[in-house]
Length: 311
Ligand SMILES: [Zn+2]
Image: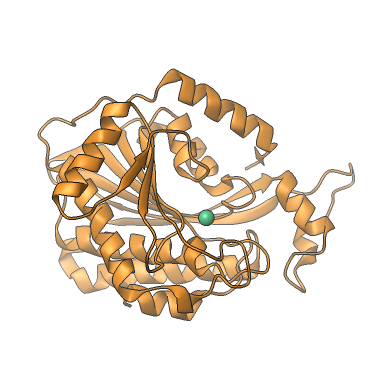
């Protein structure tokens, strides 16, 4: 399915833990499997997973208390006997394309599936899901030297729950992860592409330089971000979020009509160019380190969020 068709078809409210979030995860899994079917023999070694996890989040509890959860689904925010909110269950879908030559080194990608209550979440963040699916198809056709991992995570909005659960569950695999590319807020016409890079300053400059030369001008901000890249950065993996300025975030106006077919393809190419550049280097061009002060800031941010991954 073309990225724009995907956004038009599935941009409906899909709050973390809801039936609709699950259905979207299932659709993503179907899209990944469909791409593998089309690739035939070329995809026999691709691994697709759907993993559930559970979380407690003060932000989610607030939505429940304010009556903002989708009608008919308030039950999933029930409170247990101790007066604490019961854990909410959500799901991560991931796909791994093993590298041809240096499979132990991983370049990973993520985009969150869920949206806030009351918003169809086209720009935030179904567009990014469509972009990641396109990047997956691209690397399925042009097999990379290094392993590429694509994570479609649940429950970002209540506090990066899906990516945190994934990083917690897959620490051993992620020991080989050299760089993480997250996409959050994407697909609208106009606006500037910004890379929020949580890594050493030279990484930031390198990406800006390489992408600029390839015809993808970007602004960079070398700082801690507010999206799933944080979960990877906190684990010591240099990480970035691609974010495009736009309008309507977290409102009922965040509709598919504002999303551009061309911008989706352009941004998919942008992240593929960044990943292909890194993959094309004989030795990975920077160390697997995140500056200490950034890691400390991330630790505090996570603590302040009050989020707990319970399973
Ligand atoms: Zn988002």
